Length: 346
Ligand code: TTP
Ligand code: MG
Image (cartoon, rainbow, N blue to C red):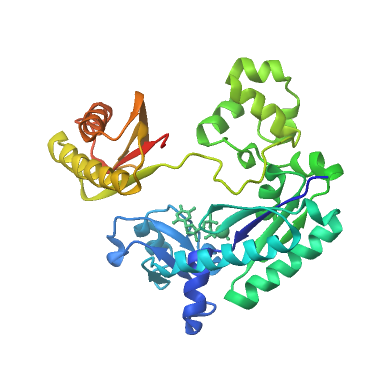
């Protein structure tokens, strides 16, 4: 029997700041760009739960967060978060070694654990409870854990009760657990797919289950099959120590003022491409895709990618692709942010 857990730290960056500043306990804390008295142009990385009561969320403009709660503690991100993350991942790896299970770190504050060797969901639950305690004793930070028969269910379960939650979804409960959830809980369902599904009258996983696989494939192509399977809680992805998705390398910049003229935007894009290229050389990898992001002043954001015929390290190729992709977004509307990213690394 397969048993998978998903561990996700609560309000990670903000919780670390709260730990480091006991005098801030109970106060709203926002980690992110400098609010500059409401004129700052960056975004929120994360906020503690107190700050979330004011409606502050990750990725929100820092200026908006400042308006929602000007007297919150606003702090810049720092290196310490990466060090704490490494220590937590090391702890998980140590503990899982004891029971012969794999740990797959998926981001700075989350990991999948293979708990199959526990033999039952009851034993896995006890193990997870001890793990949460061990994290708290070592780091004075809380985590939320979800346990299920696969990654999909474990991940949704870890988010189900936050902060400091532990949610177990036994195999026989999977379909009932998923049915009332909004489709946005599923992998790969972003705002666009959500809108598309809504037009088809599909808002919850239960609605999604009314549709046959053929119908969903007709509408969404191969992704339709993934939706069909997810709606039934089917997910066969293994918990593996190697990262499941190919890494990418990218940089982005927010302009001090919105810019319409293509010239300075393209110049900034060249600087980003140079930095990305430096990272490519430092990591000794080749890239096969180039993606540019363009965010307009009103936050409408577009991305466009190009796949090259062969993997390369060439700076002229990166430059040409960046120019070509970005050009089409420019000249009409004020631009706030641009990004350059390369992927399919080998
Ligand atoms: P999350 O796990 O998404 O968020 P969180 O840990 O702050 O809060 P939650 O209790 O809901 O899990 O992300 C982990 C960290 O990654 C987060 O603390 C800060 C960083 N992050 C960003 O920098 N920008 C973002 O847009 C998001 C979502 C996260
Ligand atoms: Mg988290």
